[in-house]
Image (cartoon, rainbow, N blue to C red):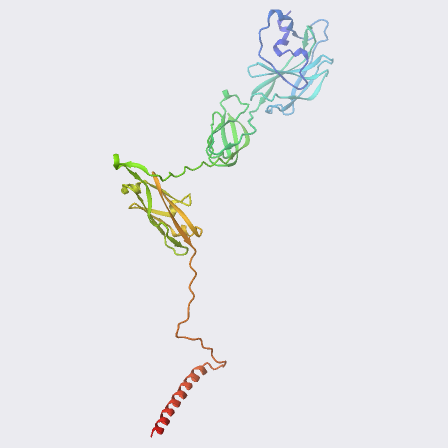
Length: 427
């Protein structure tokens, strides 16, 4: 037998003579392995039937081509169309396809049609897991016999070019939590050997996360909750694949603040019977009352029981009713610790008793103060030597004055007459 008449063995293409591959589907070819001598009957030859083998009708004149955008790149899972003619009819007659990589390695095999002499725009589905790259399709007509019978095939229509475009295969990114490390790698069908470059072109990643341009890994610790949409590109040469993705970051749990130290006396110095303890106390300001609207600050002084010169250097903050007070609302000066609460802040407190805690690195001093409502404005009283006078109902504004003056004059004359009359009787 002339070796040129051997097209390929069925073992090399995954047992293609069984006819088990559906029309339009490609079966992935596993790498060839050595067949043991005891299993030699598993091999089956496919011979090129060009009409020169006696007794055969011959698979002569077969032709095929890609139609409908023959030069267009395709994506994994897409369909292309093949038009063919000159095939043989029969239950075991197929039109088959081999997909080869750029190095000529057979990767996939499948049937386009069965028992059909010709076909127009017959669909062929590109494998969904195929890497990006350049491929060729070999199309041929073949007779797939069962058992140990030899298969026969037509001439092969070779070199139908096929370019598979790069695509980003990541469709969904998992959620994250603020304050918790995040690590997720984007994927594509572009081989790592092609050295693809990843980038963000629109939108932003969550704050605290970054994208590796070489690996596509999104890593870091997110710092803010929210949903962040962005567009990611992966590029090889002049070819770019794009996809819009999003990451949702949930709010992390709020850590429980460390409580202030318990103000219990702590041994601090001395020896033997002279050991002394340290504590803090409010020596000025405890129990005072502050009235809303007064506009004056509220002063306190805290002191250390020993080594008072250290008091101010150990001061670390203020709490009002158990809540940390912002430094903008008070001033602290040395000399023990002189503390002044601003009137603006005091106006925000409710009426009633409040607790102030002056905090130090080794204890605290505690006091209380009362906030009262602003006093009501005092009523304006009339002077004691004045009475209200109701003017007479007249249009002449001078009447009250004239009337008053005349009355005084009459009273004076009456008094004078009385004096004169009493004088005459005395004589």
